[in-house]
Length: 206
Length: 200
Picture 1 (cartoon, each protein chain N blue to C red):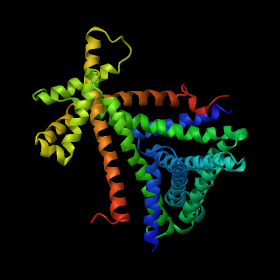
Picture 2: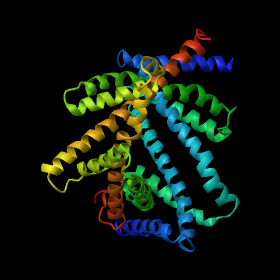
Picture 3: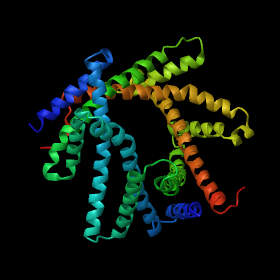
Picture 4: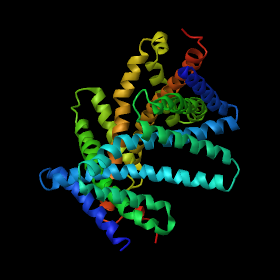
């Protein structure tokens, strides 16, 4: 019972999503719209689950006064303030939520990603040491694309943008296309396995 | 006044995060935890206003669309995952999400990532670029074909496929580096311009 019903749900919902592509009329088309609306709501609950887990973990940390519990207080404070302002007074520009979004979320988010610029520099050093022909190709392709996309590259040699364009349009497209087709075949086979109940990892143990 | 306070808070948090470049420290940890809390809070508020309110709360409680009780129940069942003893209840909602995603991706990936990409690769060989592109796609696909050992002609073609893949990875890496550098420039402009007023 704990396994059969979830498997039946996956089969029915999965089949409706597949069949609606070929038969977009009633009743399959209506079911598709209905399931899509439901899915949007249930997906949102998945975020609630994640936030609930965050509260549980950090709540426990504070309750047990574990090392670094003060940081957990700060985390829960940020979470609570954003939820109260966002749900209570809306999220439009001009609200207190938007003020916090603009002065806390935006700068911290872009700084976190900007921080990666430094780490990517050391990663580049390791990746770009041309120890074999493949690494050399990676190096030369990245350098040419970067030089072709910045004004300094064009100032150095007018052909850099042309070469970068060619790399993007021809060998890069070929490589990306092979990856995309490979991924698509993998997704199709895995999806079929899931819908038919052969792949059951998402249902967990027991 | 509020904007000035906001800019100072944003500048200090930016510096706290950059302090990680020296080493892990309490100021960075403070900013890191605050960031996680604020991000999670942002998404909850965003989802409430853009998903729950227009798709669940208003239609169910104001327009009487009672069928929406089903996703509400399935959603609440998913949250039961937080309680280990009754966590198995969440399987129903997970099964629904996995089913809908599998069915949707099966069709869309087959259409856009397989059929359309194959169709786009059916080029005439009057141009050298078209030949390179088709050879690149085929050799790349052969590299992903693991049902036979990569030896002889198959091995050579797979090797050529690796070269095309390395060029593609290099191009992607170049773009990623540039995106991160442009974010860094943005933060420097904020610190030197908006905060310290040194840039005009």
